[in-house]
Length: 351
Ligand SMILES: *Cc1c(COP(=O)(O)O)cnc(C)c1O
Image (cartoon, rainbow, N blue to C red):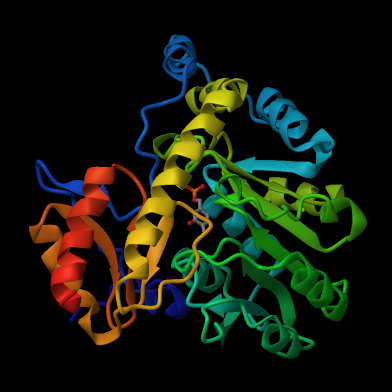
C-alpha cells in the first residue's frame, strides 16, 4: 500500500457534505429558509452593470458595501466586517479568536453550520441543550464558560426552532459572561421578528458581535453576502481572516441595490409573516407542540416520526428539512407549499 496524504485528524472527523435533495419538478423547496420572492427591484440591473467589469477584481475592502451597511444599521464603517455570507464571517470569527485547546459554547439544537465552523478552527465545541420549550438555556450556557472559552454563540431567532432570546435574559447573560469572551449573536432572521436587535449593545460592550445576512429577508442567498457588526478592534481581526476578494462586485452591487429597496423588502417580509401566522393558526388544532416562531420557518418536533414525515412531504411535493429523530423545519414560502405539508401532517396525526 502506498501512503496517501492525510488531512488534519480533526478535519477528517467532520462528515463530508451531503447535498440536500433537490426539489423535483413541480415540488416546492421549503428546506433552506430561502426567500420565495424574486430579487428586489434594482438588484438585477445592479448585477448586470457589475458584470460588465467581470475582468477586474472587486474592491478588496468593499468600501461601498461597508458604507451602505454602516448607514443601514447605524454604526461606523470600521465596525462592519463583510464576507461571503454570514456563515463565512462567523468562520472568520472562529478562526481569528479560537484554536486548538479553546472552547466554543453552542446552544443545541441550533444552526447546523456552527459545529463545523468550530471544528475547522481547531477549537472544541461545548453543546448546551435547549430548554424544553426550545429556547436557549442561557443560565446553563453562562455556567459552561471556563478559562478555555473564547466564543459563545447565541442564535435569535434560533434556527431551526424559531424562538427569540428575550432582551432581559440576554442582558442578564451578558452580565455573567466575562468581557474577554466573545458573545456572537446571530441575527440572520432579524427582519422577521419584532423583538429588539442586539445591535445597540455593540457600542456598550467590548465583547458583543452581531451577525447579519443578505440571504434571507433581502433575498440574495445565491450571491453570498453577510456581515458582522462589532467593536472596531474585533472587526480588524475579522477582516484579516477574510478570503481575499471573496465578496464579488456582483454581490456587492446587488446588496447595495437591495438596501435601496428596503421598503419593498419590508412589504415582502410582512407578507411572509402573515403566511407564518396563518400556518401557526392551522397548527394550533394539531396535537403537536410548535414553538412560536419569529422567523421565516416553523419547527415541527416529530421526534422518531421525523424522517417518515419528511419523506411523505417530499412525495406530496413539499421538500422540508429533516433533522432525523428530532424534528422537521419547514420554510414559510408559497402558501401552496404549506398547504401541501399541512395536509400530510393532518393525515399523519389523524386530525
Ligand atoms: C441562513 C443562516 C445564516 C446565513 O447564512 P449565509 O451564509 O449568510 O447565507 C446564518 N445563520 C443562520 C442561523 C442561518 O439560518
